Amino acid sequence: MSILLHLLFPPRCAACDSAGESPFCALCADTLVPLPAGCPVCSAPVSDLALPRLKPRRCRSCREHAPPFAVASAPWLHGGALAEAIHRLKYEGHCELARPLGVLFEAAVRPRADVLVPIPLHPRRLRERGFDQARLLANAMGARFGLRVLPLVQKVRETGPQVGRDRLSRERNVRGAFRADRRIGGLRVCLVDDVLTTGATASAAALACLSAGAARVEVRTLARAP
Image (cartoon, rainbow, N blue to C red; front, side):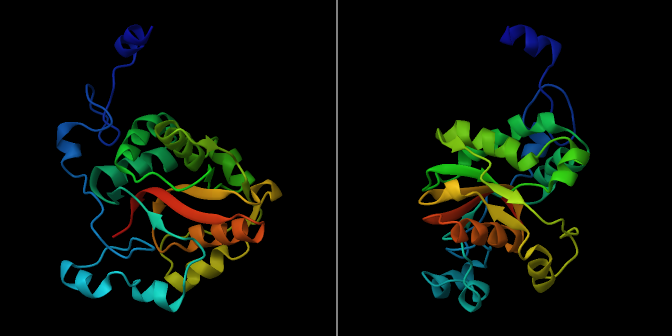
């Protein structure tokens, strides 16, 4: 059956849609950049010259405003073909790209968690889009690490787009937007999303988890903004 499906639906590049290679063709794969070393908490990339002074201290943002999550990390830098593929997944309705993109979690560090929890869309946005990309990516990550995926966080308030906002505006935009199920009490949770930028959304979701009794929260995304 798998051979027949392969013949009927040959693999395609998640970015440029060329047939024959997945998740990326050779040309697009050359644009993938592993996330460089950075802040040990939020993984914000820093220059090599700053690393001796940074370790084991946090970046300035994490020192001034410690995030509620223990650590946030991603295997890849957001850009190039990966950014194009994530855009196609989220905004062009290509939900089938979640599975090949999930292969990229092979490069991720295993979470110290009991359960994976997607950072969800608001129900109205979910109805419009028809799928939740964070849930699809969490399923792929769960298969990679043998961890359960449970929808224990809900987005209870609609928020405007985060794109184009500065850090403070992003934080205000998502403050109080999430609520966690009480079943999360005592669990070590790994929140899953597609891209980590300032960490505002992840922080709001993590705070909801901790408020509901989660023992520990960390964050994994497919990509990290430069």
